Image (cartoon, rainbow over all chains, first blue to last red; front, side, top):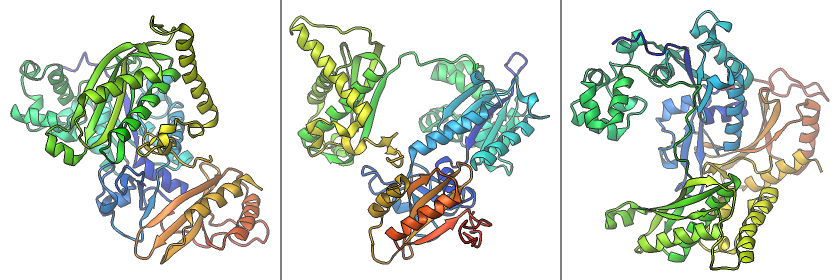
Length: 433
Length: 106
């Protein structure tokens, strides 16, 4: 492979070691690597408790997996601390960490990738901070540790994907928590990987597809005919081939937004919902939440979709795991219109199954610059109805969501009041702070 | 009443459920990174894991203030206090060590 014309830079992918658990350990005055901490969400839809994160020591001892392990998998060891999540605190720490990164790179060379990962393009600035990229990485690690008490893991590469693979495959197991992949080391670092799902971007379905084609590891993937792979898998085939050779032509400075933005919410219900009224209460609440977010973003939606996930028992009877339907509507951000559309979708498709999952999404968004009136109602009435939604939003922004709720949220089945303080579906933290 | 004290007492009363065979402790930690004193309610049933519930973070980062706050709090509760991250530091009023020994996982 001739890498001469591929972009050569210095990219870091930095993540936090067991982020949530480490933040909780530091808040408790403990060393994140020594503490035995499990962050467990005990929200009422987690069926007793869901492990969100474990400190490295607890991970090693109890073999727990974030977002998979349940309360029942956590052994009753008196040495272990179980703590509730505080999402607001983690968001605050993430912002602090990115502020530290900004001392090493320009704003446009930093891309926060997730709540605990960021991509840094140090091509233009690494020489200011050390003699080798590794030295700079150690300097960043020390700065974060000194100022926030947290340990970070760094993957270094000539492009972002090499940095990501270095991070995922090697840095976590390295004593310095740093690892490097460069164009010249791709064959020795990427090709020996036996399990395709260890690679970023390859999940179980892609792995199964590749195995059907006789590709079982990265070395084999790198040596197929890329044109055949593209014919079989489309654009993704080409991308996977590039991945196997450590090629990534993306430019961090040229951010691409999504082609079609969408906005929506979903939730897992705390128990199986069977009763039509109860289900409709939840759907309405989710619809109102989405409509309110549309108004906050000053957007109108011209398409709504409703996804319903059935409970396990209903799935085995029905054969489907749920249904997903979309509907075009005239552009709107009003509660009543969005809720009417999704209730219609629900009533057309639901046949009495017990449900456990509700998602409402809106798409085909446009800027909210005007209100479309219709011929069939008096103008004043339509304008007033739109204004009501804005007044309710205003009151909630000022005094909090729970200070003004629709009466049906108080009925059996409503979840909006309990979920009001959640961040990303988990406990946000002390409501007092 | 002091805001910090009110928050701690409210959440403490909500979390201190007096379950059988359970040890309750208030953990006060010194967070030099955030410059705060953090309060937690630790509870542990016999032979089970410990639960650690955050109560409050005090942002007034002065030992004299912490000492006064704890004096008030001790009027409200008789739970044992556990201090973490204070090794080498002394209470301003009587110059006694706050925390005698460093814990294993500090």
